[in-house]
Structures are given as C-alpha cells and as structure tokens.
Length: 572
Ligand SMILES: Cc1ncc(COP(=O)(O)OP(=O)(O)O)c(N)n1
Ligand SMILES: Cc1nc(C(=O)O)sc1CCOP(=O)(O)O
Ligand SMILES: [Mg+2]
Image 1 (cartoon, helix red, strand yellow):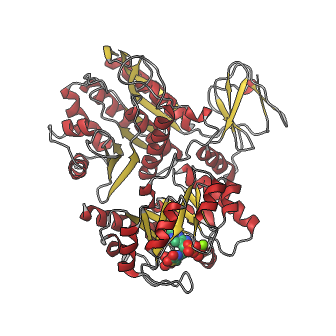
Image 2 (cartoon, helix red, strand yellow; image 1 turned 90 degrees about the vertical axis):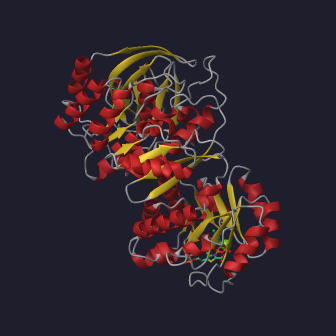
C-alpha cells in the first residue's frame, strides 16, 4: 500500500488505485516500483524496502496542470505514450531497455514491440535472435489498436519485412509523430540490420518520419558511404537525408574527431541548428543513441516541438552521462549509464555542471517595463523567448517588489530548466540565492563579482558588465565566468549607458580571458555585424528590446537565432 502526502494522485498505468491512499502528511511505501504525483507538485518514488525519494519533473507537472486547467481532474487523464519498436539488449544499456528507462525517467508511458532479442554485454553483441515478422505485426496491432499511442520511436528493425509491417500498421493506426533512429551497427561495431533494411527505411519510413537521428556512421551509410569528417559535411548530410522525406533530421556528431564539444546538426528543411554539448569523458556511453531518440519521442508526446524536444533530450543525455561517468558495470569497453540519475541527484537533474560558454549565443534579457507595456507575465515572456531559441535567460526586473520578483523568478526557473536553459538574475544575488538560480549578472556598480562568488559558491554562473580591458581583467580575477560588453550600439533601454561601439567591443574581447557576450542596441539589423568582428571569445549577443519590446517574442527570437547561425557558419 502506498500512502501519499497530498490528496491528488496522477494515475500512471500499472499503479492500481487500490494501492494508493492519501493522507495529509507522512508517507510510507510498501511494494512500489512506480512514480506518481501529488498536489505538492512532487513525484514520489518507492525504492524497496522503505526508502522514499521525492523529486520534481516540471514537464509532468505542467502536463498535470494543463489537465487541471481544462477542468479535467478525473482519474482518467491521458498519459503521454511512446511506443518503441526496437530490439532487446540483455545488458540493458541500449535498445528496448534504454527506451523504457528514458521514457520512465521523463515520465512518459512506454509500450514495447520487440523486434529481436540480442545477447549482448559491455564487450559486444554475442547473438541476435529475430522475432518472426508476423509476431512483430501482432505486437504492433495489439498496442496500436488499443492503447492511444502518441509517438512511435523505432530502433533496431532487423529486416525489410519488419519495416514494411511497421509502415503498414502506422498507416492503419496513425500516430502524432514518428521518430526514426536508423540503428544499423551497435556501438561495439556489430551489424544489427542488413543492407536491404536501408532501402526499406529510405522508401517506407523516412517519408513518414518527423525526425530521423543518424550518427555519423549511419548518415554515411544512408548516403552510400560518403565521408563525414567536418561540421560542414554533417550539414550537407542532413540536407541530403532530409531530401529522402523526413520532416527534420538530426545528424549526431559525437564521433567527429578533434572537437572539444559534441556538435549535432539539426535541419528542418529551411534552417540549420548547430547544437553543442560538452563532451563527457567516460566509457559509459552504450545506449546514448537509443536514449536520445526515446527522450525526443517522450518530449514530443508531452507536447514539445521537435526542436525543443531535441534540446531537452540532449540536455538529459548530457546530464545522465555526466552523472554516470565513473560507474563500473561490466568489463568491456562500453558500459551503460544511469537513466534514473534523477532519483539520486536531489532533483537537480537539469542543473548544468559548470558553465558552457556556448549558452551565451542568444542571451535574452527581460525587461519589466516592456512586459507591462505588452501586457505579458514575465514567465510568458521567458517561455516565448525559449521557444524561439534563446540559449540563456537573464531576469532584469528593475522595478519589481522583492516578493513578486522571487515568485516570478521561481516560475521562470521551472520553465527554463524544463528546456535545459540556464536562468540568471540581474543584480540581485539575494534573489538568485532564494530561488537557487543558475547564477547572476552584475555590473560595475553592483555587488563585486568576488563577493557574489563567495556567496554563490563555485558552481554558479557569474557574469560581469565590462567596458574596458581593465574591467575584463578584474572580472577574470574575481572568478567570473563571462563578461557582458556594451553598448555595442546606442540603446534606449538603459539610461546614460556609454556606447563602446564595435571597436571598443573588439578591444575588450581581445583583452578578455573570459568568454564575452555583446550587449546594447543589438537586433535583427546589426547582430551579424557584431558577430562578424570575428574574435573567437565573442560567443553571442544579449538582447532586450529587439525581443521583448515586440509583439511576438518567439518569432523575433527565432529570426535572430537563424541570423546568428548564418553569421557563425559564414565565419567558419
Ligand atoms: C549580459 C549583460 N551585460 C551587461 C549588462 C548590464 O549590467 P549592469 O551594467 O549591471 O546594468 P543593469 O543591467 O543592471 O542595468 C547586463 N544586464 N547583461
Ligand atoms: C542592460 C544593458 N547593459 C548594457 C551595457 O552596455 O552594459 S546595454 C543594456 C541594454 C540593452 O538593451 P537593448 O538590447 O534593448 O538595447
Ligand atoms: Mg546591474
């Protein structure tokens, strides 16, 4: 019997109602292996014998709240549902097992159609036993005809017959989205799908797919063996695969040699997005491809756009790898990682470890006056900017009462973290501490950066406004992570702000040991000129009015993102 702290239970399939009771405080666990929600916006998970861990899954909360908004508080709420059609991995690092764990960790129901059973471990694949095609078809029919699947994700499809069966069933039972991970070779180098499957994928599944997620080897094989050695090669591969019919393509560059970051290329037929994540040194990478595709499917099932889903999925995988980098399971060269790391990490699952300078790329700085003028809440403004592609958010609320600021900042942090985007607070170190924000931005007349560092600790992000090389040097020795340099142009947003111009910006960048974000008067008309000063530590632009003093924040952000991407790719 499970006893909950609060009186609202989000029903997950498999947790019988008669095993749940509700009381006002305290909780105990008997035989529990599932997770569920309470009014307190927490998820409770039982770990035998009687330990209870609580943690937050913001996107699930959002889902529940969405249900509540619609007045739907009955026990019949729809649970987002991913069906994975893939092979079983006896070592449980990849395949069906990875898919189940990834969806479970994200809080999405996952059903399974097993296409093959593999005998594998951390050394390699010792055997493959394909499930007969007619029995795969039977599994598909069972699930699709009954269980309201939202998204289908495919992994190992061992024969062209399986591909055909699947495409036939998907036409009979259409789903909201199809995620195709074109698994061909295992991480250990073992063949998991024959060449005829390639034709099946290209002809039958790609035209129905919303996203296809090949790694470099798979992308190369799909394109007849072309060499993929640079980011430019990845872009042209993404374009060629897109021409085969899927709505979007993610070419994963984890195996690209000589790069510090792992860069993936996302292409939607119009725009390229270069998505980088820090490369984590670990042997425990078995199943990253399956996990990434499952997380994308799970996020789409919850309502994210494909690009949002990709960003969140990358953040999940990066966090899981980082958390699991020292795990020792098995003796071979490729170990599994821990999908359920959130259970052991105090709920700070999306907290970034350290600072990633590429987050400065499109830095959105909010402004309370502009939000008031357009009648928006700060959290709606933040969500719209993130939807449009903002890579970091700074809350710059000069007029807010402290209590209101803390409340708004809390809500914004939940939104930002559910997308894997860091949230900084302007000026107010106290507010950053109160809500456990990712960091602060301080200016020359605010709290000194070294004091902020002492208060916030080594993990938080600290940015400092600098207009001169001397200030940049000071920021570095004070322990800042980046500097903001402006005004690049004149601005109406900040009174009496000296303009340093592009020359002044370049001088500060060249002198700075820290990454730089440019600020002041930057918008669609001049962002490219800023990036084109061509100094490698200039990582992006920080923008207020060109995003927030506009009718549609998301579309302005999207346009700016696309311009910046083009500018950066011209510079390469
Ligand atoms: C990214 C970034 N750069 C500079 C500033 C300006 O900070 P500051 O000089 O403290 O001025 P206010 O923003 O506090 O008015 C910034 N906020 N962000
Ligand atoms: C907050 C701020 N700091 C600046 C600096 O030069 O340090 S310029 C600025 C305002 C930037 O607003 P907008 O994008 O609307 O011009
Ligand atoms: Mg300030």
